[in-house]
Image (cartoon, rainbow, N blue to C red):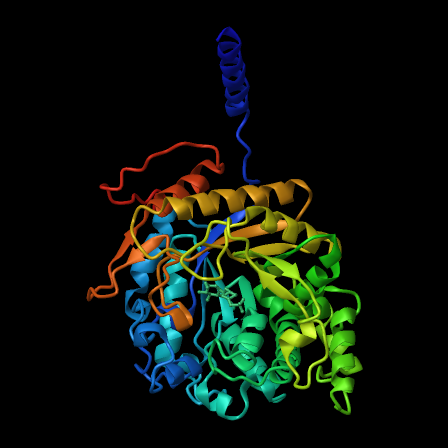
Length: 506
Ligand code: GBH
């Protein structure tokens, strides 16, 4: 009994010492924000001269491919309610707000011959409202809502999109670049190309696997790079901003030591495919990926690799075409290879080219999204790998977040943010050059094929109410407190009966 008491006392003492340690601080230069995207929040899908994009098209398809037949026709109505969105950013005390531009709202013909002034006004108003309160706009030029007309012309599989996209980009630099200092050209090429063109899980819902996603990748990278150089050559000296690309990146943990190569292949097909050409010295696709696709193609009877090659000029254009690496990170998988996935198949396929299966462990906590496993140490491993692979590039965490089915008391989301931010600080202590962190999302919104059924917001949105009422969740109060104290080590029970205060003194 006495020894037990002694043990309890000692343990208590040790824990207590630990608790009294100086709380670890977020470095002063680290900026905090939240993110959204145009189709997911704007609504007003056919108002004031906006034309149809690929999400409008599939949302109106019969039978409906989206859960509960939801559409983004109204979404959060941010086209009308953007001032409330900025007010929320002020409540949280954000340094920046990341949002995206709708191509078909700005250029209704898809091309620069017609500029839709009402669409331009909307973004001017949003940008000016943010800046009025010292919140930096961080603008994504393309977050998945391609004009339908360009899709009819083949979309990202048509190499002419290099001009279409860079013309559009030049226009938005001219229109908004005097006030926008953070540009992201594209959001998540892997999702655009693999989910859009190969496995049919995002618009335009194509299933041309083993072929279309690689055409898409190449064209998208060249379009990104051309846009980067337009900014560099024509705008940077007068506008003084920074511009990069944002990739989705999971962590792929090998099942055991026998699956190290599988884990690396998984990483190269999902992240390296886009990161390697821009951030490695080669300016080209990852060697292992080139080899796997070339070998499979040959065995399948193709006359050349299904992965298109960059020309020497394109390699020059793409290499180094990003001031920072934007990372959207949510989750981790276990990577596994066996005979059944690592073979040559009669028919081409991205999955077979990759030759890896990724799966989740059953004891990992999960979000409301089937794919979202809570594995904070994966974030740490990913960030340190990026540092080692690419000579420690500046990183912007452009998205990180957790889905629930709704409700204001979201302790699971709070646990997610705490543990992922803690892992990010671990990586930063090892020297990873993280400059900014962005929570996905400011508020619940249209979650693509899942419609409104999966909720990622710090603010809950009542989609049935006419004003699309936004209410802070517990996680919003906690995020605000993290930004205010610049630590994770606090205990604080917010009084959620009180409205959120605005403390910017403006
Ligand atoms: C982000 O993508 C998007 O940028 C954002 O618009 C979206 O709302 C947010 O996440 C939440 O989903 O891996 O092919 O098996 C996140 C990317 C989405 C990638 C789900 C993985 C699962 C299908 N992830 N996806 S797959």
